[in-house]
Length: 76
Image (cartoon, rainbow, N blue to C red; front, side):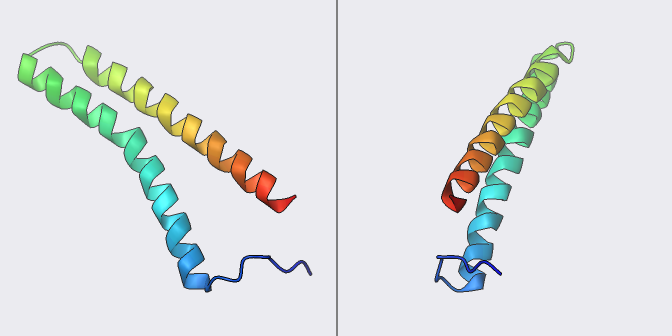
């Protein structure tokens, strides 16, 4: 069985991962919510909502790929 070189307590590692995943979730959700709010405020079609959802998805996926890459390189 492989032992991790990380000698931090498990709770600290869990909190770090919780922070990372919460950040990614907010990066994906907040642009869509901002687009929805702007659409309501401006009285426009849901174009800003759709734009916000796509922007949030792109930002979230970029962060997920960065996280996966750093996690993979840390194991080597």
